[in-house]
Length: 584
Image (cartoon, rainbow, N blue to C red; front, side, top):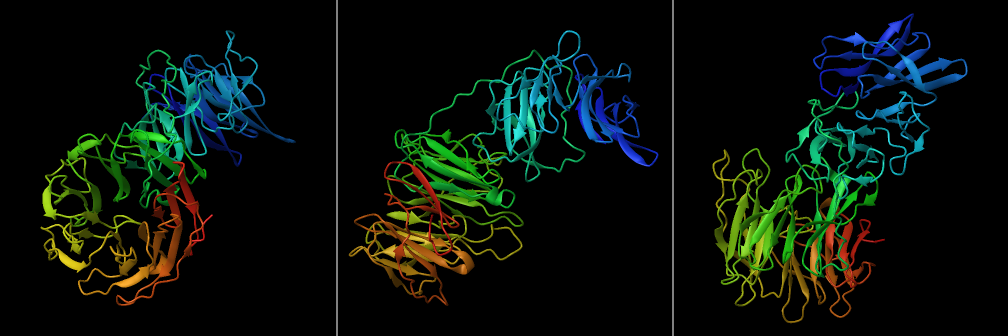
């Protein structure tokens, strides 16, 4: 059977069910109680030439459905009406199919295979001339009216849309999200929508796209569209709620943007850029939706902030930011769908800066995340360990981690792939390291204690870290040249990696390679040393060459072979490169 709809009071279900006669399979419209009892056949197509599908309840308890008739020259579809007891069956609209019926007015959305027209029901029970649907509704396959009859929703190309019942006021509910909507259902009171996504995730969202359920329920619906049982009290018809759209900033802050990385369920389906406004420090998100090969509009997600760290906490991103007034620390994690965020929570502070590194893992669980912050008054480093279940579990206390330090560096490009923390001494610029243990105490494995700090070298003007093969790069404070080591072992050698640079970073590449990036001190042009490999801590730096992207005042964020940066005009720029960092 293929599900159709619940009746308005939630007491009956209508559906199309197969039958056989004379060796031919055809379908008839049936009704039953929600538990399958008290079933009844309500349509009687000709078994030899006809099938009935797509039933919808009308406002007076009648049913509208599509009858497909096979003729010697092909097939035709007509919209039929029948009472719930199977009587008074008759054709109401020729040469089309019914896709949705307004439960209050009886108005119908019709189209041969996709939605093309809105037909108003008249006083005689028939339908007036069709009104062409506007874009993007024209061509939708799954329109559905709200239980109160005041709104209509539909999906198209993975987006979920909402509008008034007369098809005006259309807007995307999932703007800014990466949902890849496959099916949806109205809540009983028309104030929320349940949906399933391209990764079999089920979510419940409000009419402005806000999350109403903070944990994904994984499911694979069968038998057609899923339904949400009404309670018979839909309330008066209401139009879609107003949505205030805040214009994106004219300029973004001249700093490396954050890139949100998603886990195995969403993978390359979704990726996001996080950037701060240059005017007020507000936080904005730009979501790329691979299923439609397009970027969503910029969405304001918080702030103002003094800075922000984007960290891949398990399969979902976490944001950690500082309040620009008192430098207190706030954090949030992604909610049900990519692009939705939980409420921000204050987790500590004040802090002079912020870093997040992969922490020890509970046994049989994902790694924790350790937030590191320096005290504004003493420059000592403090740590806060958040378990994978945060923010469901309470926020723990901060503990002293080390210091004082002039600055701190943890793994980037990608983040969350190593437990090494590197810091510079404020006295002489010496470089020190400390590595977090892999497992939390209490597990079945021998648990190493949190390691002591040990010296890597120095002095250095600045340091960067890339995990996965650990690559540590430091800048000579005298001439600005770059020096790199490919091991965190205390006795590993440093190798001169490049000429003086204004800024530098590194990134993990394919097959264990790594890439160094540096900006020219005079022009800020970006150069790359690509495809570096090491053997037992020894390596020969690859030649430097220009990357070929517009000159920008900041270093790029590296996401795979994509570079994201902020231009001199304050625009966010994302370019795609090949494995040799030839970029377009």
